Length: 205
Image 1 (spheres, rainbow, N blue to C red):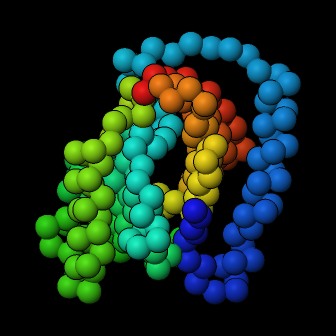
Image 2 (cartoon, rainbow, N blue to C red):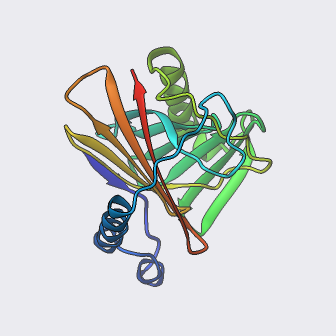
């Protein structure tokens, strides 16, 4: 399964990097990373103070509703089947709805615009479903944002071996599903302001 966020016009599409180009650039970065890897340790019980966000839960209903996920700061996002995006900041009780990377509206969780009623129901459905049925994918937490999240999931691709998610802040997350069902490996590649952060995380399920 796969999906992507809307592009509003030709000028926007030209400014944004195509999926193929992104994959090519990331492959080059990963090859260099693997050749020069330096192991490190991080206590999973310590809250991360730098702005590293990663997906801890996800549900793929893209054939009907969309692709839902939970971030490490507990924000809930959905890339809807029509290519729009919603994300809930639970600690602020506010929602950001995006029709493209340049078009966002924010509103209180309890008083959404009438035209977004169905999409809010979908967002709540994913939030409740993940809370009741999906285990956390690791213990590493990120500090809550002080402002409403405008982060968007641009692309996702899911196969039997892995799930790839590309976000609007330049972060790529790959969840590699190993043959041993109790173990998984996650890779996070974050690119912002010419800084590149790559993390490999191993955890039990």
